[in-house]
Image 1 (tube, rainbow, N blue to C red):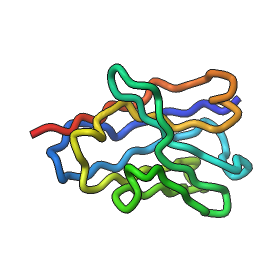
Image 2 (image 1 turned 180 degrees about the vertical axis):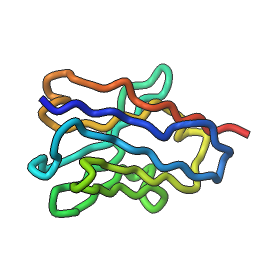
Image 3 (image 1 turned 180 degrees about the horizontal axis):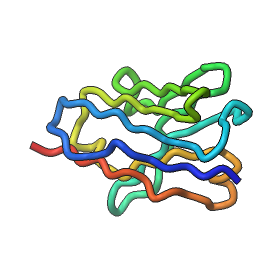
Length: 116
């Protein structure tokens, strides 16, 4: 079972940028889909973006045009570049695979705070 560790969160002003990283404990080359999710206080966890092993990406409408997901299979890492951040982007961000999320396995996430 692959382990995933998210990092890169922090405090940023509205309009700012952050790059989140998701480091896997083993090769992600064979993992077809990697996802980013987020959960704000008092809200349900929501899907943010996905990337396939072939590099196909898809985004939630709320982040389209501002966030970019990428993966470096050689480094076993998935990234989420977040630009033009808004207060409503503040949340704990998680990466996950479909297999792990189906089984209820989640990492500790990384906190993103957007505030002036």
